[in-house]
Every structure is written in structure tokens, then in C-alpha cells.
Length: 543
Image (cartoon, rainbow, N blue to C red):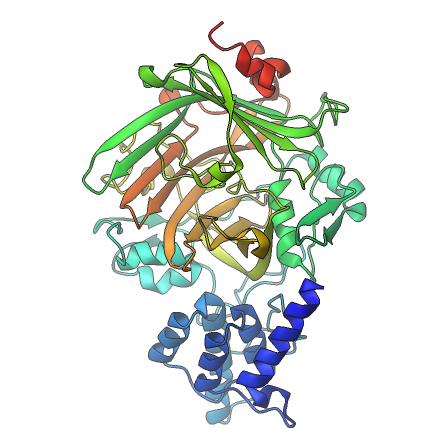
């Protein structure tokens, strides 16, 4: 019922703000029409659909595009207007006009056929059945290109919003004057063979459902990727489910010898670091060899995360356990062992917005895939399919000695890490469902989700007034694992908090080039389920 009402309101809004859309014959849209639609709250993806379907009356200038961005149109409207602008210019020059053929939907962006102005070197349709985004005025970035302060604007179409802000110097944190990004080829990043087999076997039965209270749920999920070819309706929610259940090894760990390191830096150059041992365990929906699909049987959790502070000494043994219920409608459970009290305490649900150990990450941020809020309490809207610059794969990350290997204390990788690549991503707008938005810290989270692994490669997070608050890259890394080959899960990331003037840098790579361990490589003492995946295990700390 809520979705029907929303659709009716959207239809009323469009007919009120722009009667020409419903009139016959339909005429192209002026810049004023587009600004009215955006000011009236029409989603940018819907405005882009209208531009594609009806065309525009003006040849857009950079000033026009700036006005549309400031009105909330973002990259998706700019791209549609640029493409439509080429058609207007072709008509004015009496050139043959290419008429895009699209079927508009309120919740998805449909892609145009290539116009004559686009180079023929545009990549072919990817194997995952997504259509390529029209790249106006240029194709892919040639291998060997060096992006620097003099030429970065030529490549900003491949940059997320937050990355562009860093390049432009819009905030205190900005790209250094001597930065360089070297471009290499795009590498294939596939989940494990068993995970792909599970996708083939089980994905046909998975169903996304909307419950009466506004929550989402996944029915009949058994393992693998729930929606390998997500389509409207609710394409964004399906992509969020793919991220939530994306492939991870059954067991990953960092010990006192290869800990997770988190360093924070203030604009006054004060910095501090903590090191944590960790054990992440997938207990159900497993696809790794020699592991039961559900090793817990009737237990109610499918995944657990255990983290314990190793350094500094005064915080040692402080441990957090997060339990993820199989029932997507149950809240994620968190408990913390406090050494001074020699006991564990359950964390309130209101702590989802609390910072983790003094960092710029909240509980809803901190997960290797890039999102930790769950799928029940969030709506996700599909915005775009595009290519962005990313560090991913088997690049050679520096160790945890931040800021060594970075540009000053800015947290941006130096070229010695490896070459950046263009990766296909699906962009989704994730928001708390309206009934639970009150008191929540974020207004929206824009996730640039890798189309192969479904891990987040970049995120822009906005406050409740929809002002940019945090942005960050997540350089997803693969590591070798015995019996598995190369597996994802290791990462290095930097988040910039533009409100507080903080940086938080996180890496699974530690001194001696040691990184995340998976499955059989995890030391035996860290494989015990009760110690590292249950409340009973918390109660045994320091005994």
C-alpha cells in the first residue's frame, strides 16, 4: 500500500510540476522544467528517464549542468542531459538524429543506444547482462595514463561524487599538489566456484518481499548470490541483498601477528592507532569446500564478527561480538566485554550510530563489504550503472604503518601500491525506512557496488539534511588461501569526515606483509566456534 501511495504521489507531482509530460503531443523539456521537477522532489533517476524519453530543448552549457547538479540532479541527470544535448546539437546542425529507444520506469535508469558522437571503442556489454553506460565525449582511459592535478578533470566522469570533492578541494581535506594515479587494465574478480554454483542452483527460488511494516525480507535464500541479474521492480533492494550476502570465505581471521589496524588523524595532525585481532565466521549459507552449509543447525545466527583490541595496552582485551540473525527482521545483536568490569554487556540498538573505538566509523559502517545495517530496515534505490576508478584485486598495499606509503597524512595511496583500474559498479541510494528514520544518524548512503563481487568500492554518506558528511574509498584486495586460491575480504580504506575534520584509515595488511587468513590457514586456536562466535566465549575472556 505504501508503494502504491508513493507511486500516486510521484505521478501527481510530475503532472503538477510539469503538465507537458502528460500532454499530447509530448514536447521536449526545458532547463526550467528540469529544475522544477528536481525542486519538487522527483527522484533524479526519474528525471533522467524523462530526459531520455522526451529530449530537451536546449544545448546545455557547463553553467546549466552546474545548476542542475546544485538542484540535486547529481551525476545521473548530468549524464542524461549531456547525451540529450548532443542530439539537440545534431538537430541544429541538420545531422542525422539518433533517437534513443527506452522504456521508462520510476525506479531504474535505462541505458541509451550509442550516439554517433561516442567512440566505437566503448566496452562491449559485460557478461553479467548489464548494459554499459553511455560515456559522452570519450571512451575508456588508456592503460598507462597518469592522472594528476593538471588533467584530472578529463577523467572526472569516472569518479564518485566524494572523490571529485577531494580533487576540487571543496573541503579541508583535499588532494595534495603532487598526487598521481597510474591506470592499468581491469582485472576479473570472481567469487569462488562453489559460490557461483550455489548461485546457479538457488537463485531462482530467492524472492524479495515487502512486509506490511515497510521492512524488506528475502524468502527462500539458501546460498550464493540472491539476485544474479537484478531487474525492476526493486532493483536497488536486490542489489543491497547481493551486497549483504556477497561471497566471503567461511572463516577469516587476523591474530596478534597480523592484526587489523585502524588509525585516526585530525586536521591538527594529531594521530592515534589501535590494533585488533578478529575472527569473522559464516555459519550458514556456506559454499566453501569441506564446510557444512549450516554448521550450527538450529542456531539462529548465520554470521558472527569478533574483534578484540591488542594495542594500546590500556585497552587490551576490550572485545566486541556481533551476531547476525538468520531472520532478517531480527535486529543485529552486539555485546562488548569490558576488562575493567571483567564482564560483558549487551549494546543498545541505539548504538548503531556510535563511533567504533574513537574512529569515524559507526557500527552501521563497519563491515568488509562496506555496509553493516542489514536489509530489513533499509530501502535501496538503484541510481546508475557506470564505471569508476578503483584500487582492487592483488595490488601491493603498504603495511599498517600509516601514514607511510600515503600522500602526507591525507590517506591517499601513492603510485607504489599499484595501478588503479576502471570497474563496473551499480550505484544505489540506501536509506533507513521512513518508520525508523527518526533519530538515525544518516540521511542517505550512496554505495558504489562492484558488479562482480558486490563489495562496496566507494561510499558517500550524507547527514539528515542530505549534506555530504563522509566519503571513503574501500580498496578491496584478494589474498591467496590454501585450497581456495585467491579470495576477497582483505582491504585497505580511508574515510574522510568533512564535518569533524578527521581521517580514519583501516587495513588488514600488517607489518611483515602479513594479511588476512582464510579457512584452513587460520590457526587452530582461532577456529573454535564457541570461543569466537558465542556470548559464552565472551564470558571466558581473562579467566
